[in-house]
Image (cartoon, rainbow, N blue to C red; front, side, top):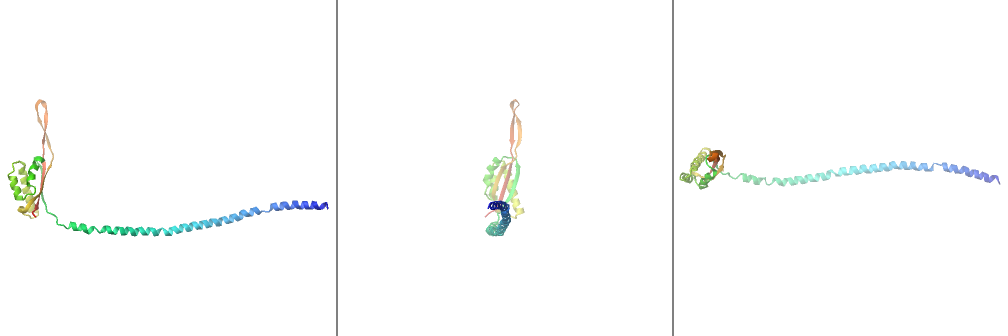
Length: 203
């Protein structure tokens, strides 16, 4: 009886190390490692499916705005016929003549040209002939030049024309000096002007 407990104690001692040496916890990480690649593969498969799905859906919205742009551009071409009708209107024939660097001021020339604006050629000749101003001679020469241009370039009769517009613009000014008392000098401005006239047929 005394030997039995010793044997039992020895057996207990022998059993306990065998239980501790079993690699039970070592198997669990192996199972986890094997499960992890499966999860990664599932995630990769989901990402590839998610990437493929929007790639297929992207061209669909891109096609819609193209159709809208084409529809929006079509009505812009409609107002073109209206412009053509305006261009087909008959243009008014205006015969012009110009005289540059006339030795008179623009202010003095405008006083005379206001009398002949809108008048017939015959009436304008009579007004310039009886106007008591030196610039009236330059205006009469310019009027005859415009009548000659109408006859030569457009085959128009001078008696059937009227003064459409007449204008006098300022030209370059010549600067001179005049000696005065006590050694002084005063400026003299010799002004010039550009005259223009236009004739058109009577209505």
